[in-house]
Length: 589
Image (cartoon, rainbow, N blue to C red):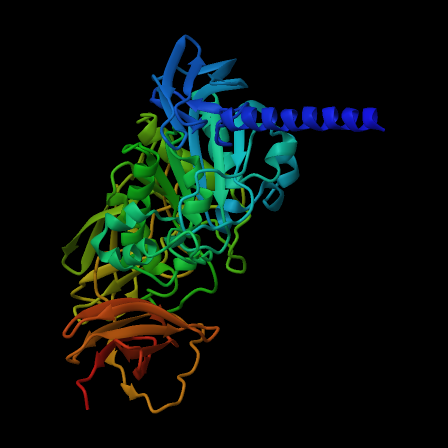
């Protein structure tokens, strides 16, 4: 009996010692973020951060090719080294990290790395597109590597660790990857003849704000209210997929500062009722990501929204996504950016066009021209440059006319075809009273001359400036479509909105309607708060207005806006129409 007890005691002691030994080794292990793993592509010709965690004060070394970098972890166990710039290489190589344990990453290539992000049109997989079976079956590219951030997650604070793994591009691994991202990367691989790494981080139906960093918001004064909101987060704050910075914190931050050349971005549908405010948010997004990835020259190329829904017979246009596309075009003022125009390949009945091949190809056209200095390539279709009134006509000048302008037609995955003796469509011209008429337009060299027999003294021109400019057919001879534009900055007709004092009844819920705008002015002698009553009914806080302060807000034509005092006591509300609403919050009494 005693011997059994002694034997049991010895076994117990051995087990305890083993557990303590295992715990000791585990606590000392060098660990890496998932984005640093076997099968990855490292960015060529840039400093390459390698980072992770270990015990505080632990010595860590990183060896890759002939380089060996050493460091000591800080008081929290964080460590980072930066490899010197590396030349491109298709030869699989190991990367070794040595601390109290040794980690060896295998099958690593060096080439070009890009992140592919946005909402559902970037998330759309190869299984969901035109010609999907053939595209997937032919996708054997051992030198293209894919890293997909799985799931849809949020966090109130930046997360240092996340999920995902690098995979070699095969028909199996690529099937669930971003189709736009793959076609972009495939063209880069074929043109540059070097390894390509693609990182996908996407979430359908999301706005731009949750993808934007705190520092990004701080870089744009007009977005101060988001700064206040994000700074108020604590680790226990409950956030959702619509809250500013919440998606970035969980689905992008853990990738930083992985060295990469640039980002491609397909998003905007969920911000589709906006105009200049989307321009401000795009500036914040780009600035914030460039800081997070520690690359002020991070290239950033986005997709302008496709044509969608029914055509608008009104030549004035301006409906739906017209102003959002305008903001996307204005964002080209950000250095190192570009925009793929796809208003010729959308689907009036489907917000997810199945032709992702041309989208990826056109994004790659920008990257090849601007990032990789292939200046013989024209990066875009014609984009408005300037205009001049010539008697009863207006002449439009373009950037990126390429080898000439033409009337074109795009069908499916086929290349754009010139329409012989074709007639330009979807041009509109306005008289001095800003009354719009459909116009005649003809190509004259690298310009377009616009006129109408109904307009003797023209003032401005609009082209494809509507939700679905399905008949727009101006291209350059490289087969790329012209971007929508307007020469004016007229905001459209306006009206004074009725102030409805609050008498205890709850205002109606907002309902979907056409794109509109509301301009608030606070005439009270105290601050007021502005709330939008969303489609589902709950209040959504927008901002606080000081006495005498004004604010312009994009909205819908059937939206209700509730005004309260500083203590959130309801004062009254407005209802928008399909005109620009002038909303004056009257003085007390």
